[in-house]
Image 1 (cartoon, rainbow, N blue to C red):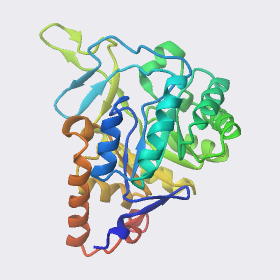
Image 2 (cartoon, rainbow, N blue to C red; image 1 turned 45 degrees about the horizontal axis):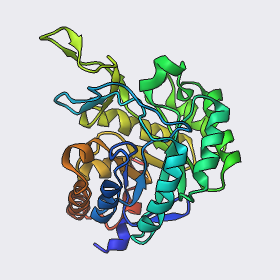
Image 3 (cartoon, one colour; image 1 turned 180 degrees about the vertical axis):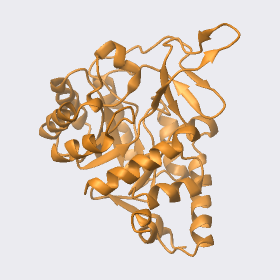
Length: 310
């Protein structure tokens, strides 16, 4: 298969592969981000950035529970001013590899989203991802913006007003109607959607009777949530015209095929990178090519959204 057959156009940016490093997996480790790009990631999403530095939750924050991960890192990051400098240095290095940089942001208020977006935009990322959906801060900040269509649209408009680069809004599955939220952010000006973020859950240590995470609840990721993610991508792509990055439980090339058949333009990889390291991108790409060849598909365009037609 021609290598160009795996390239995708996301918001006018050409990704050399459909795979996207999901936010938060590599923390603030620049070497991991670059290694992921060299291994085949078509775009790199940073850890979510807030205006002020954030300590996050106490350890333990990430646990493997047998079918994936459950985590409550609490959006730990060094703040927008430090991140701006790091992004300004990282962007050109990724650009030399032909890989776009997507800066992920979050805030406590609608105005705050616009404020942090404006600061981060000065580092010239290719795109900005707006994280309105992380379930780990719900107890601290109230209902996530992702749980309400009006609030989600308001955040989207605030970020669009603050920046000129494409804006991707990351949605949560922990809602009654994710399609309504998707339509709201599209109406608010979003250029793309990322779906889904983690599913809120809890794991209890039966030896002690205590939750395994210091935060008690956390976000479930990994293969256990893949069918949920595929369903969400399928429903969202049937309802909106903007591209969707499918995310949730992708660990093999055949999972990428599923996401694209559901309608995804690109496909995020998260927990698999945490468990297997950045080289997982080269493994998944090889599996993807094998899977397409096995079923006589010549390109990603041939399979994109095919589940809607069958």
